[in-house]
Length: 63
Image (cartoon, rainbow, N blue to C red; front, side):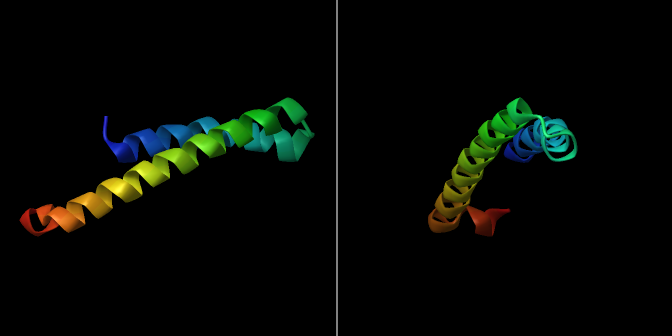
C-alpha cells in the first residue's frame, strides 16, 4: 500500500469520530480522534523523511 493510501485510510478513520465529537459531544470519539490524529502526525513525519531522503539521494531526478 502506498503512503498516500495509508494517509487516506487514516483520514477516513478520523471522519466519523470528529463528527461524533463535534456534533454530538461524544467524549470517547474525541479520544479516538486524538489517537488517530497522532497516527496521522507520525505517518506525515515518515513521509516527510522519505521525501527528504529521496531528494538528497538524487532519486527525484530519475522520476
